[in-house]
Every structure is written in structure tokens, then in C-alpha cells.
Image 1 (cartoon, helix red, strand yellow):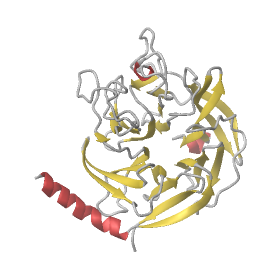
Image 2 (cartoon, helix red, strand yellow):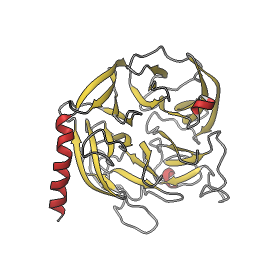
Image 3 (cartoon, one colour):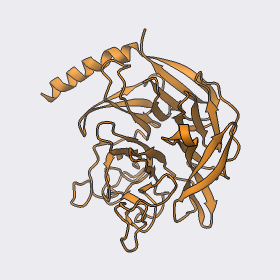
Length: 363
């Protein structure tokens, strides 16, 4: 039966794959990291070195916007994700994550400001990851607005001490949930718990680099990097522990020895999907809700950096029942994946010669 299901899935997917083509909208970006759509069809794109640009609907890039705070760019850190307020038409607010220098090193911060022509005005820092650490690794991070207007922030463990992602006292290796102005929601799962950071939503994450709301349920899903193998797709729920580093399918770099247990184990969540023995290095992700590509509606798409592919995951409710790797011949390091307002998939290609690409249905 499983073989029959996979065969049917392949047959349904093949027409879309065979007929898609890529259209490059923007070239020459330097380490682009994230993409977000404005209501008028323009796009915001971040470049890790610290530049935030507006792209016209045809992909033409404007000059970097003025007004951003100082960004500590280096290694895997810098200017990272960007998101548009659900009420942008009224308040013109945009949000971004970035590495902020300070006592002890740096940490991921979330800022927001009002888009005003070629600048961002009235900038406020609404969240700071604590503690700051001396590291340029595992900065995460993704921003996702929930249906109730609260903001999820996916954070990395900063390649710090192995117990930090398990400690509720800090923000390392966590997903946090805040109000759009940075306040702590009263119903957060760790509010009132002695010694716990009240912003926490979940813990035990290694390096969250993709997140999106499941359109069927409104729940947050996220992808995170494992070490040598052990990349995960998780359904992220309030107060739960996702294991790192106590439970992981990943191994120590180079020597391949175990890091923790593989589970299942009471008190820890198992991933919906994991990759072994080789990491794909998952980054941005998007659920496809449109019918623009035959056979793909309802799939989850994940960009792969090391895997240099667009990974399509077929879902049955909360179960991942199939995987297909697309664009393998193009060998693109895909940093972000978004569904545009036109229902098409938009891809951000990372690296020093970064691009924004639109995937078109066949003619």
C-alpha cells in the first residue's frame, strides 16, 4: 500500500515538475537572506551584511534603506529575516532580525520600524536574545506572525554550551512568542515559572532557519539544522521540548559519534521528518496553498543550502509521507522560499552572487 501511495504521489507531481521554469527577477545581491511581500506587490529583501532593499514587482532593486540600527555581521550572523505587519496598510510597520553587538558578544534582536520612502523611521528594538555570547554561529532566525497577531521568533543556540538549549532561563536554542510591540503575552507557557524567561514558547532547538504557519491548522512549523545529519521538521507547540542536544539524530562532526539519544523518550517531541546521515541544511520554508502548480497544492517546500535543492514534502495532515528534491541540476543554495500574492513560489539564492527567482508554471 505504501508503494502504491508513493507511485500515485509521483505521478501527480510529475506534470508540475516537467512544466515549471525559472525566471530570475534580481541578480547581484550579496548574501541575501530573506524575502517578504508588501501589499502592493513590491518585495523586501535582506542582505546579511546589513542592507535591506525594496524590490519592484519586476525585481529591480532599490538602494539600501536608511535608518537601520548597527548590525554585527560576520559568520552566520548579520541582517537576517524580514516580515511585514499584517496591518501594514494602516501602520506601515516592518520587522527584521539581526545580530546586535553588546556586552559579552552579540545576540539576535528583533526590531520594527515604519517604512517611509527610502528609509525606516521610528525604529524600536522589541526583543533581545539573552545572554549575548561571543559567537558568529547559529543565529537562526525566522519571524512568523500568528493568526492572532502575535510574533514567533525562531532562535539558534549560538553554538554555545550543550545545556543552554535545555535551560528555560535563557533564549538560546528557543522559539519565543511576543506581542507585535515586544510585550510578553500573558498566556505564554513559561509565564510565572520561577527562573524561566517569560518569552519562551518552546525549547530544545539547535538552529531554526525556517518557519511558517500550517494553513490548515494555524500551528507553527519549523525546520532546524542538525549537526552531521539530524536536520528536523517540527510542529512547534507551547511549552514543549524538542530535544537538542539530549535527543537528536545528528552526530558529532567528523568522528560521527552519538551526541544524545534518538528517542522517542517521554518529555521530548519527535520530529515530523528528519534527514540522516547527511544534512540538507534546511533554510526558508513555505506551505503552498495555491493551485498554480498541478499536484503540488498542500505541499511544504523547504530550501536546502548544503543539499542545493528545493525540497517538496507531501503531507497527510501532520504526517510527512513523501519527499521530492527539485532543481537539483541547477545546484542552487536556497536561503528562502515564499509563496507570493500571485500564488507562485519565489526563491532566494544565497551567496555572493545572490538572486531572487520566481518559479513559473509551464506554458
